Length: 271
Image (tube, rainbow, N blue to C red; front, side):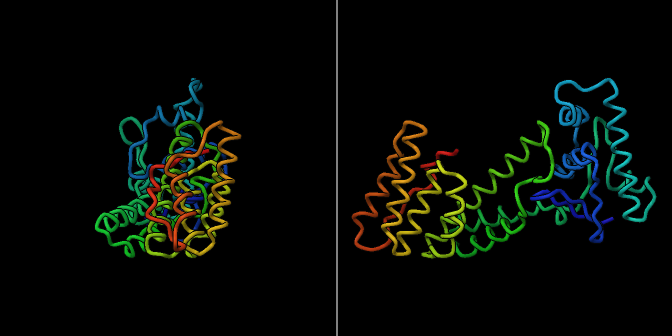
């Protein structure tokens, strides 16, 4: 009955490498909600809100019961067990809703957070190299945006947005440590891509400026600042934060290619 649940990318429910993920859109959303919050009770009302918004039909409870039954039968076929075994041990009915029981090691989102906790603990202990290893392992579980192939309703949309935000925050922590360790080339190409995807995100652009400066490319670092400033002024009618402007001055006046420590976490403006 061991299964693996994948939510950090396309949705997948696997048993012995066999994909049990349904193709019908509503069933996929039911499975996505169960998978995203595996080992947690999902209330019937949450399924209704995810599937039908604020206006569930009169038949909502019966329809949801049908979707769950179809999922159980598909799982039973893939696992070559009777449907009642799935009902008792995998996709379980509990008072008020349903629960998908999965070993934590088989749930990519749970495993991601376990690695993240190890990384944060090493970071607090100033064990930067160990923290980098754990952050990279956590980010290595991602195969794309959370639930990338699911048309999310209101409940899943919140979950997926929060998961993607966590991924970006983790990436920023990893990059900050790599820059502290003096490894700009390890993160430079990734920073360019992230800065392009988040054109008004001051923290990422600040990290890009530091990486370019550390790599001995101060002219490019200053051009990154001026490009960001033009966008912020043009689109928001604002000036870059004081810390980002200070970083620009540090790069200009620095006698070496490495500016003084930059307070990355204080200059975030997202688009």
